[in-house]
Image (cartoon, rainbow, N blue to C red; front, top):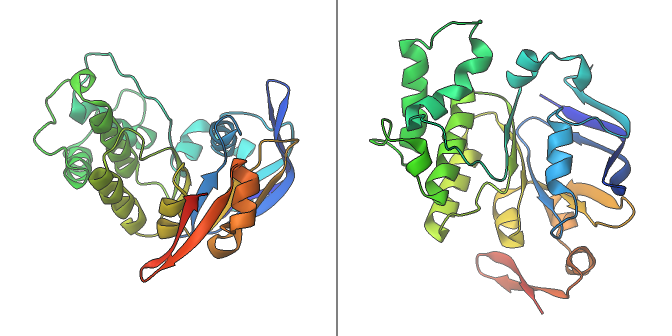
Length: 252
């Protein structure tokens, strides 16, 4: 699985998120999308998922233009977790997890026992075992995030696009879920994060959106997480501190 952009320009509301941007996201890599609030991280992820048309340029998945995939074909390759998911419907936790199986079902086809088994394993993996009959609308914000990830795990796609997957989670749950995501076999991850130290810990690459005139860059994590570059990115002085467990980044 390889997702590529060629001379990609993404715009929203008269602002340019990235301009003439080219990169290759290879199978098994883990990308952090970093930038200040409003830099366009959500917009870029939606574009990479095929939900928004770029202003210019091409996105390809496995050497085929993303726009040439039908919705079902695309959903069998790419999973997207949005930033806010407020479900007020009368659906159970298991119903939401089973949404990940929809790309593999024909019209009016019901989920099979095998589909339910996949969803139950995903709920167990995110710590929601025993809640499958509970109404999803009654979950806390953190539980909803874990449920959204369970649905993605149930979807069993090679590429996951995650918009702030660790939001609403306490420290333990952030680490547990990022451990889970990074342990998924042969998955490629692209996730927007606000914590540079989590990006350094979990990601192999970083994509930086500077939020001004389409400036963006991407590459190996050790090259991208330079204090001078991060200072420019966040518009606040960032320093690096070496520890026995690796480098950590702090606001000056």
